[in-house]
Image (tube, rainbow, N blue to C red; front, top):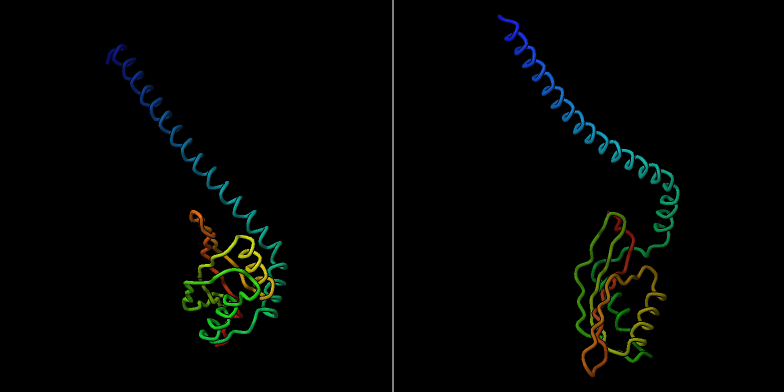
Length: 171
């Protein structure tokens, strides 16, 4: 092998080494970026878990309070009737209730929920004052949905959903 061929082989080996180093550096950089992202995600999760642990006493107290104060579970039909009475109690208010629906109550992990949807027609102030008075009177009554439509030259129409919460049924 002549010196020229030997120099050519050395240059070729050096070029191969440079290519390997370049591809290795790229691989290292992409792997490093992936690991940095995973590290940030894990750090964020740890911070969230630490915050949850710090709040655990508050949630324990809240659960005890709910267990003591939620209305006792009653059968599904009684829950529907109780909610229907709440909705139909419009005495003293200038509004009209229609299109009432009472789907089956659901049992969640810590409570039971009676649900209703209905349409109320009347002046904005009247409907909102009536709704607020019902929520104030009845513990654990919430309004997760209100949609207000204003037809031309007519009173506003309110599509409303209400939920009444009860203690989880004892099996």
